[in-house]
Length: 113
Image (tube, rainbow, N blue to C red):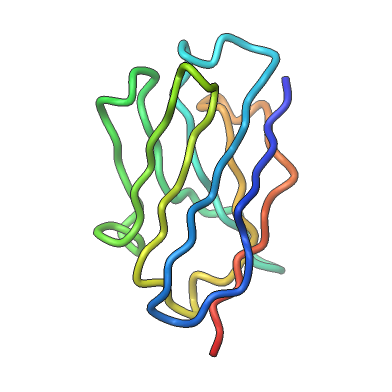
């Protein structure tokens, strides 16, 4: 199983970024997928989840209305569109299979002017 995140970077407050996670080594379309984030010295925080078929999503309160999770089962990818970014969104973002047995290496998002 391999999960590879990409798309992080530096963005100004109010800006947008789109994170992607490429999955391999398992039947991607059979699993819900999640995004988490973790700041230094803090516990990993759940951000969003999407069902295996992409029809159902849910979000943590701090990101609801600003972030959108989506997936492409044909390409084995899950994405996180992040809009109206705030400095407090600065951290490393990870994708995970729903059972959280497997994690990517993370991608750094920095929101700063």
